Length: 441
Image (cartoon, rainbow, N blue to C red):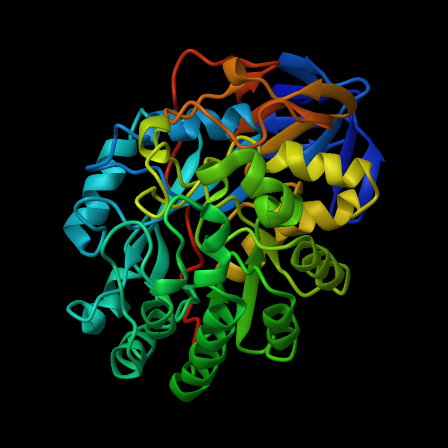
């Protein structure tokens, strides 16, 4: 009888072909057998639970180095695994920016024995490093290149067509895009009303996003480069992106699928302020329409923490961004429970989708030979998000007090039980993600 390290017993396992009642067997950090018999050094009882492929959050800001009073790699990844996330792509707008081989190496060194989940780091595009990006994007532990077309937290900005083309022509991997048009936002700065965050989506309006998305699609075609448009907030953009799937993939966030500006700004004030903005209920409904049409490829949290003290500054001095990595899966499970999307579609957007778009090795599905990354959930659990559960250094969430159906119970990374029922393992053991060593061109 075969001997294994770990057995997940009695759960409903979500395989590439659909859900199945099967035991999962793990050896040396990988899925070794699905169903069948054997002996295991450790058995985890998953009776009544669903075992999903490990959730991958492809957009988080963990703020280290330089802004660690908001978050750091340890606290951010702790929040991730408490929320059922097994891997993250972390963004480059730190201080200093992550825009060089040295900066990537520094982040990987900081992550060692401190990050609870597996991880990769984006390199930020600048006018100064454009010609080096083709080499930088292939460094171990690098998620790819990130372009900020519009100003957000930090000072990474590439907003003119000439430099955007230089960036897009340097390298082959899919490039992540923050698509807001800097010129239009500068021209509309007078639309901001002091003390009133409800003016945030008036200033950073639909057209700011749509202009930038149109521009980057045109430039991507000119450069022959695939792109990934982050945190899409307008139905018009999703309709456009749906017509350009050969060159562009895209992301939506739980925040934009859950919050509506008419309710969020009066209740939350600057805590609802993010870039691109929370928009109207009609916008939210439009995002759901296009999600139902299959256009968004992935769900990303855009976890972007700021302290309560910073958020208390009067608008527009208040910074944009909100925590989200820990609440990504709970919010989306609640949407599944409400019938807004299927569990199969959620799995595709949080595991198979990221693997497919970015060429992750050994991730994204439960299959023999793949990493034993599992997110174990109770689909029927009714519970309320409460502040003590939150691990982000920011210490708050726009969703505190929200009652949900569906909860992450366990997070298993490469066969290691990192979280179970809110309790963490004794040691963080996240490792750099690996990507296909192929030419993406």
